[in-house]
Amino acid sequence: MRLPSSTIAELRAQLRAHGPVSLNDGRRAIAQNRFNMRWRWQYHSTGVGGCEIPRVNVRVDMALIYPRWLDRDTTDTALVAWWNRQEARLKEHEEGHGIITLDAAERIVKTIRGMSGGSCDALGIRANGIARRIFDDLRARQRQFDASNTAGQRAMVDSIRGSARKDP
Image (cartoon, rainbow, N blue to C red; front, side, top):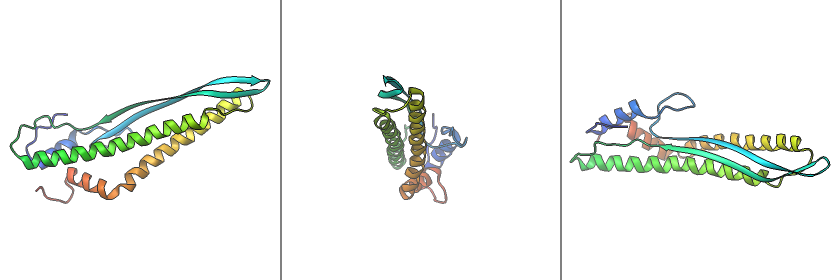
């Protein structure tokens, strides 16, 4: 995104107007972590009516979307310093979401690999249910991550969006 801005207020306005659109609620965000997760496994028959899952594969496609200030040619060092601080905070936060996502993928692999018992169809249904619960937990953990970092996150968002504060 090109941000033709020379003041914090202008940068904030550009962020609000051009940030990525949330796929969840359609609202604009300042930065975003978008991901798609797919899982699959290989069955192995252990005999009459028996099955096991020796291999599990989880694929995560992730995009971390950040704003970029391309027109940084300014002599206002305070403005550049402000931007650099906000950019670092955004990256740290979105990377935190990425870590939570990759952890869930690893949990799916560790939980399902080695499962056995019953027919392969029944085992697949059970394994898929487990993967879906871990995925649902991932979404809850993402919300908890946002909530648990409330003070720092609110300060960052307030600073970027310029809530009730005045520009320095």
